[in-house]
View 1 (cartoon, helix red, strand yellow):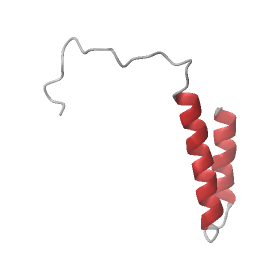
View 2 (spheres, helix red, strand yellow; view 1 turned 60 degrees about the vertical axis):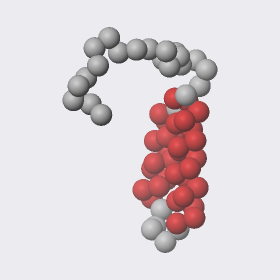
View 3 (cartoon, rainbow, N blue to C red; view 1 turned 135 degrees about the horizontal axis):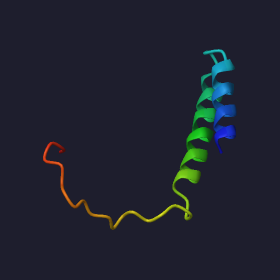
View 4 (spheres, rainbow, N blue to C red; view 1 turned 30 degrees about the vertical axis):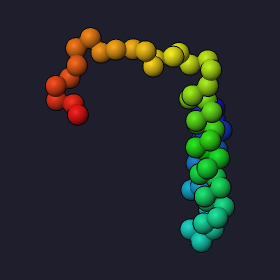
Length: 59
């Protein structure tokens, strides 16, 4: 996955700034790839976790 994201980022850096549509497509492809890998079924379900000691300085 990291190799693919690196390839997409390298592609973004090599494009002239005038090619906005292509740049946007590459950014969307990178975001989709990251989201697919980061939030797939093999990741642990942490939705039921509770903090034992809430942080009073947070929110």
